[in-house]
Image (cartoon, rainbow, N blue to C red; front, side, top):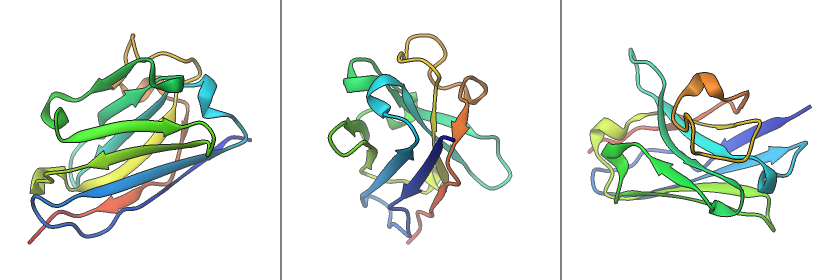
Length: 127
């Protein structure tokens, strides 16, 4: 059975940085696209970024472009979300999830497209 585990969350100050990690088990992320999502209290889950295997195709939510960077390390079978210049609006429970295909070209930020999910890691951004 496939699983994903996120880590790296924690309290961040505005304009600070954090790096989230997503480690899958049961499959090799080199062959599947990975997405990052977040859900703020009282709001719907929203897509933040997607990367295909080997980072060939990458998509970002407009509000994080230039601040967040998604990447994957196939040797470590780990995906990352490097977050910089954090804002209070970035606060949320961050999840990684996997598509059952290796592309971010169709609906990369639509959570209904994703099949397996992690439990999430909290990222509160506050001074």
